[in-house]
Amino acid sequence: MRLQEQVYQVYKAHIAAHPEANRHGALTAKTALEKSPLNWNGIIEKTVQIPKIFAPETIAHFRQIVDTSYRIFGKVIRQYRENADYRRLFPFPKELEDLILLPVTYPSLLPIARIDIFYQEDSGDFQFCEVNTDGTSGMLADLELRKILQYNPAHQAAIRQFDLQPFELFDSWVHTFLFLYNGYPKKRPNPYVAIVDFLENATFKEFEEFVRRFEKFGVRCEICDIRSLTYKDGLLYSAAGQRIDAIYRRAVTADIMAHYTEVADFLCAVREDAVFLAGAFATQIIHTKWLFYILHHPRTHMFLTEEEENFVKKHIPLTVEFSPAYIPLEEVTAQKDRYILKPMDAYASKGTYAAGREYSREKWQKVAHDLYGKGYVCQQYCKQFVTDNIDFAWDDGHWHPYINMAGLYSYNGVFSGILMRAARGEIITAHQNERVLPVFMVKK
Image (spheres, helix red, strand yellow):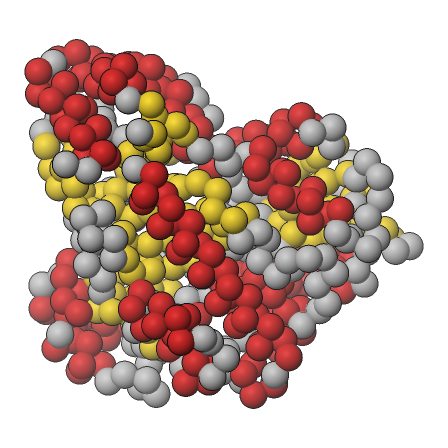
């Protein structure tokens, strides 16, 4: 039996032997979560009783996946920036293309990303789900959910038998951010950092944790609404009047383009390289769900190695625009179990994510018809790994199969940790059926 399976069986056996103790612990943990930073205005990150445990060899595989992905993504970004014929394959408006082509004046094209994959734990095979770049979040969920494991009797039994090591996602990102800043030609000693977003969309408590970690490194840091920044005499200022030297951008590109005129000062500072920006707009090339179509395009295979080309063919699901130019509507409605529909550029499950296998044939025909030609991609539905788990706090306290999705954090191309999500059903939907699991590596 594999090591991570051994640990899982310890949890399961303890829950079977002590169901009431585990139920009581889960309800105590639920109360703690309601008072924790994971309570987002009444929306609480939910979890299940057994956290996610990975053996060292699985973690080593995750490192390889991140390394290969980062290498491929870097090539795609460089090709886009250097070749007009390649740029024409992307559906970006002129305003966004101009931002993407701005010089990147520090040593990274993709400072931060989370690569969400469906990983088959029994075979090591996997399929990509999507890639998040600058708006990448979830670090706080892993941190806070680990804290409430003190109330979980099954977890306490497991750590008496196994060495379970968590991942660290805050200090490691601050260290990466400052490393990149030190490679910026206009760097200043003792920089002032702003974490910027449209604050109505922000995971504010997570930002506050990052502020604390920057300050731990001796770096002053402020949370700013991106619309409140002002640019004057070649300098960018926060609403409080503080000069900003470096920006950790959490505002996703889609939101920036939707509020283009409202962020004019921010964009002017970026165009004139008056501030360090992690990440630059070139990251949108990787964030867009159109990336998967591009990765399969013959033009991309012209500059990939044979190993990289095989990686794409094996692990990137076939993806096309859901429109008459790319796929007949009848093809998708007739074979509903083969397809999932996603917004071209969205995050946090915003917009309709529709998997054909969730619907009756009649309902699927209506859903597909309504989304056809409306800015969606049609993607091959991927097999998902299923594990049994139990939820005493928000569900019925019985064992159920949960689909799994691992989000692999990449900090400047280095694997740094995992956001683990699970759900009952065919797709994982944020703040609905989603459960977030704290993650550990078990050491031999």
